[in-house]
Length: 451
Image (tube, rainbow, N blue to C red; front, side):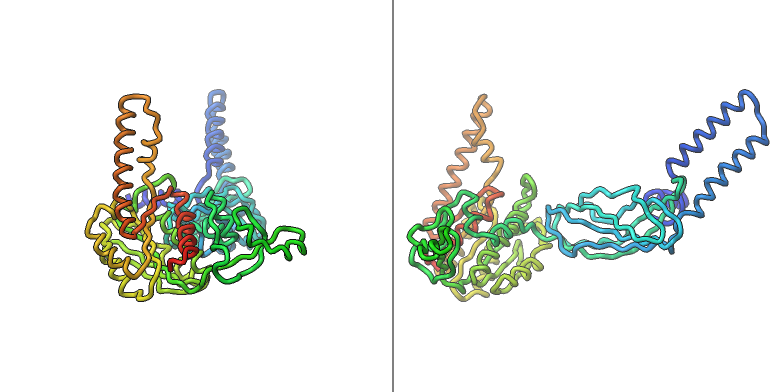
C-alpha cells in the first residue's frame, strides 16, 4: 500500500523521478498492435526480441537527453500583496544549464482560493533562461505561503518526463479590494457624482481656501474663479475645505451575522472595503482615524493616525480579519470606544442593522455615546427582501410574499426612525454602493459643521 502511494504521488506532481508520458503509452500501444497483426502471417521470436529491444533502447535513450535536476534552476517572482478579486501575474524563471532542449509544464502550490490555469508545453531552450507567466485570481483575504513548485520536463520526442520539485517559499498577503478607494483618491468629486449623488464639498464661503481646479457638474457657480477661467480659457472654480484634524472612529463588526453571503462576497467583505474607502477619505482630508474590529470581544485596534501613510497601517492590521461565528458584543465595543477616545469624534459603525436595532439594551449605551460623540450606523440592505418587494404579483403566492416583505420593511423603517429621533441615524445601502454612501455621509457631516 505504501509503495502504491509513493507511485501515485509521483503521478500527482508530488515527488521526483521519471514517468512515462501519454505519447509513450500511445506509441507502445501502436507497436503492440503492429506486432499482433504481423504475428497472424508470420511469427518469429527473433523479430519480436529485436524490435522490442530497439523500442526500449530508443525510449530509454531519450532519458539521457532530458535536462537533469541539477541543471534546472527555477525562481518564482510574485507580488507580496495582492488585492482580492484583482488579477495578478506570477512569473517563473527557469534556467536550463544543460546542452539539451526540452518542453516544460508546471504546477505551483498556490492556495485553493486562487483561481488559475497553469501553462503547459513551454519550450525550454538549452543554456538559456525561460520566463513562464500565469495569472492568479485570489478570492479570499488572508496570509498565504506558496512553497513547492513542481516541474515536468520532456525530451525531444516527449516519451518521458522528469519530475523536479523545488522549494520556493513566498509569503503572499491578499488584502481587501481597493478599487473604490483608488477611485475616490483619483477624484473625490467625480467619485460621488458618478454614483448619482451630487454633494458639494463645503457650503459656499465656509472653510479655508484649498486650490483652484476645473469646474465639474454640481459645483457652486458662485465659486467660479473668473480671472483664472479667462487666463486658461476653461471654467475654473475655487475649492474650499472644511477644518482639518477632526477625529473619526470606524467600528467594524465581524460577528456571525456579518458572514451572510452576498452576490460576490459577504457582508464583512463589503464593510471592510467601504471602511477602507471611508478611512482614505478622512485621512486625505487631514483627519485622525481610529479603526476597531470586534465581535464577542475586541479583535483588532488601529490607534488614531493622520495622513495617507496611516492607511497602510490600517490595511496591514485588518486584511486577515475573518467572520467570527459568535454574536457581537456591542456594549463592549462602545465602552472600549469611550475608554480610548476622549475627544468628540464621529463614530461610524459597520454592522447588521436588523440585529442591532432589535436589542433594546443597545439604545441605552448609544444614548450615552450620543452625548459626546456623533454616531452613524451603516449596513447592507437585505437583497432577498428587496427582491421580494420588486417581484410582480403574478400569483397569490407572490402577492402574499410581497405583502409580507413590504410589511417587514415598513416595520424596519419605523424602528430605524425611532433610533434617528434619539440622534442615532442608521442607513442601509446596496452592497455595491455602501462605500460611496458612507463617504457622502462623512462629507455631508463636515459640510454641516456637526463636528
